[in-house]
Length: 71
Image (cartoon, rainbow, N blue to C red; front, side, top):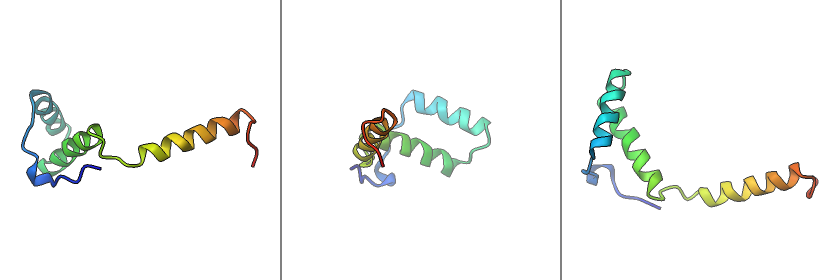
C-alpha cells in the first residue's frame, strides 16, 4: 500500500498539466486538482489494497450468477 504523503509528491508530467488545465476549466479548485492527481497516481501505483477483495467478490458473483453456488 502506498503511504507516501501528498507533500512528498512533486513530479507532475505534461499529461497531468494538461489534465489540470482541463479540470480548472471545469471549475475545480487547486486543492481538488492536487487531490485528484494524487489519487490517480496512488491507485496506478498499487495504492489500493482492496483490489484483491474486489476480484474475489466478482468471482463469487460470477459463480452465483452461473448457478454453481446458491445462497
